[in-house]
Image (cartoon, rainbow, N blue to C red):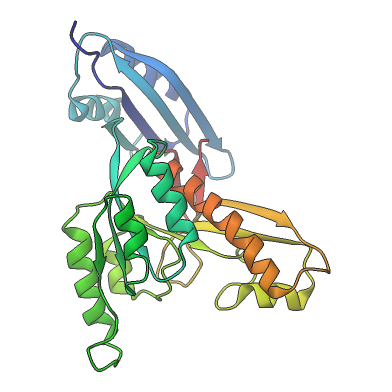
Length: 290
């Protein structure tokens, strides 16, 4: 018996107007694409419509480009339409020295619970090589200092980093506690494809030492934020957030320890969301279909 054709993911965002769902489902039905799940949202203030569906071809594979073109013909000007096969996408993970976020992604990948695959891990330090190689994955050391211990020019180091990343052709680059501020040129090289975890509940306590900032303010919750990277530090569109409760007995060190637990879960959630094409960019915000 022949295997069923792979599911497709249909993504639409466009100016809102009457009859959009009818038009979209009409095209999908005409192409004999069975809708197995769908979600939609209208930002009434902006007058914008978002739609995501998972569809199963009934009569065999259907060319994605043909479906995209047919949908574009029935939708308003300015619509963005994308149809892609629901298959695992490759990611490259960038790290420095902290293992907790990387470890969570490695475990999910190893047990098949990541809707993608880790193609490689890249570090500006070499400490996490052993952890990565235990999972049978390539680790690339791209140091940011020369043999004499001097910092390389940032653009030179990033050019080396980009060559290693691009060799694996990732859909996304995940910064799993990668402790380097990236230049605008590097960010522009991967538009809306750099996913970062920040160890605080942004926009509060951005920048360095957020747990010490939180301790000094006597906060009662701490959290983590996963976001797309933009040229503005820690200000990209937010993908996922979560918090945990703390109290006056927590030292900055204990806050940081508790924070690591929430960081790894929030980053893993964000990676899953982007790999499953559940995140729409909407200006400085996101629309997320969970």
